[in-house]
Image 1: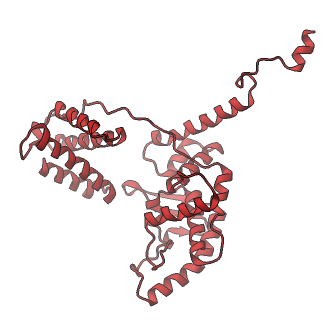
Image 2 (image 1 turned 120 degrees about the vertical axis):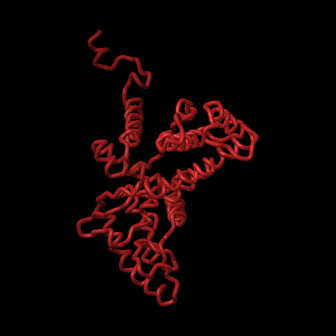
Image 3 (image 1 turned 180 degrees about the vertical axis):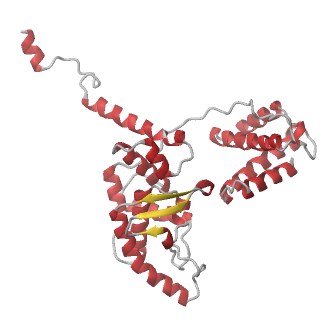
Length: 322
């Protein structure tokens, strides 16, 4: 199994061009599966792929359940195991996939949280001031909301990826897929203000020998003049949330959900939102329709007399019945 896992991960890296984060997740899940087979299920030091059957896979999922592993994590792990054996079948190492017929655990599908327009404005205006970090944070928040980028996509941006005059950027998303994403004038204005400060921050860091990537021009810098990390973006959003007085539970991905939801509420079609978000499947984008349905139901329940349980006839009906 160890050799098969190694071959599979190398295939994902070299041929599928998956991100390091995704590769680590696959590796962790598959190593957990191999450890279960060797230590708990078969009780032998090494396991060959041909020794794995559907009962072994189901027993593995049951063990994860007993360990308190969330349904979402169990489903993700099952997906990794299925992919591993699908690869083995494609390479001629197995005749059938023992995980193919194993049912995935049922899991709740909570709707992604998003901000209402007033909350969004409060968040974007939370970082006031003209000092470099305030300008950086304002540009970061504006661009997150204006483009719907993933955090990893945001921090990977260099200035050459932006056309400020045309208000469009180029980003490489999941699976190495490149897409063009427009952004609005407020984001462009915030970026222009940060660009002026950026030059000073970068020059000072370079002079002190602190800049870690002098040959690149990352848009968002840390105080050392290097590329801002995804964790630092989370801290920027946390500070803005506190300053804006918004309830906890807002994170950088919330702005991506907000971007998509506001587009849908404004009349954008799902195909367009799919392209802007960089979703490979329309089914992923369709979850935002549930948000819109919930909003419409809330409007109906608050506005329609029958929805509120008001069954008394109105004044016109009373006069007609007299």
